[in-house]
Amino acid sequence: MDYKHYFENALIAGRNATLAPAVINKVLLDVAKAAIEQTDYLLQENKKDLERMDPADPKYDRLTLTADRIKAIAGDMENVAKLDSPLGKVLSEKTLPNGLYIKKVRVPLGVVGVIYEARPNVTFDVFALCFKTGNISILKGGSDADNSNRAIMKVIHGVLSAHGIDVNFATLLPVEREASEALLNAVGYVDVLIPRGSQSLINYVRSSSKVPVIETGAGIVHTYFDETGDLEKAIAIIDNAKTRRVSVCNALDCLIINSKRLGDLVHITEPLGKKGVKIYADKKAYEILDGLYPAGLLEHAQPEHFGTEFLSMTMSIKTVDTLEQALGHIAINSSKHSEAIISEDELNIETFLNRVDAAAVYVNTSTAFTDGAQFGLGAEIGISTQKLHARGPMGLEELTSYKWIIKGNGQIRKS
Image: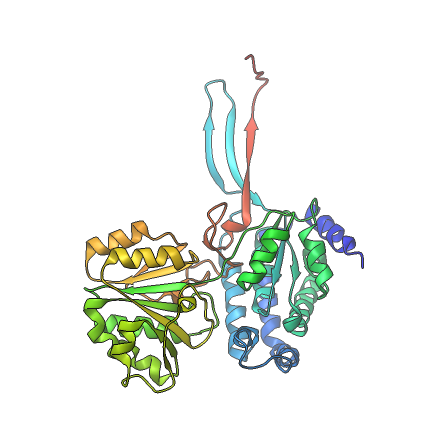
């Protein structure tokens, strides 16, 4: 199948992408309204996808839409509509001694391609953020969520058509693998490609794409309970970071505990045991929990249990004697997504903040906050774990580049 027409239509839409901010915001508000009004239809199509997936699959929760989740997604789109557009924002300006006036202003990236797995909310989020920033979006969802994605795109296209706007502002490619390969090779049509999904998907896109890629990496997340950490804070933070929603990339995977606080481990893990969290504990932690943590939920940790993104009610525990050892363990096993310390020692806190290399580094709070909406960005197109162009939750500003504008009055360069 020839996919070129999808890309050509997107380019044409992009060339005509001069919508007024008021129109953009009204469209976003109308899409949010339509999503709520058509909740039954969206849930009906989502159910078709859910029926084809094993509920034990870690992707099942991410695939699941509910009325409350649709309401939250609509709320995110409303928040995006309320935010100021970064387009045209002057980043710097100056007049040179020769009289040239130079300024640097924000502009859209252009055509943004997104390859994603069983995450139908991404369809709404990508459209909202790209549309707000004058970008054209080309989406390639996975087969697991195809019914859901097509239903969502139908809602979006219905609103665009009602406003007399080219529906090619947002395109959902066919589900077959060949469409992914076409998108990976869409040089001259697509300006940037963003993968959303498993580490294997991200690795595949990074190694195969001829289009520039912004990585939204897997979340292998640690929380270090320092020897000075407050126990009550730790109990609440670790429970929330692990169990709030286990299938998301900011969920806790490994608790690192200072050996001087092993006596508190039973209290820290008590809420986890009640919720059925399986723990792979190293030797020292296992000895403390053995007989006190629910039978069948405690096992000896193996090397492969560290540096693993579980995406389920599972976590590991690593015991260390010093902050330096904790930093070493994180450096080796982190995916550079989100890392946290629970401590009351200012020197240890500052050392942790300065030494940990991650997109988001937390002190005495849950890593569950690594989220574009929680950061006040309205929504997110992904959480970048790389350092070029964008890092952390990617909102409106991260979907822009900039250009230089130079104004003169007949100046010529003489040397």
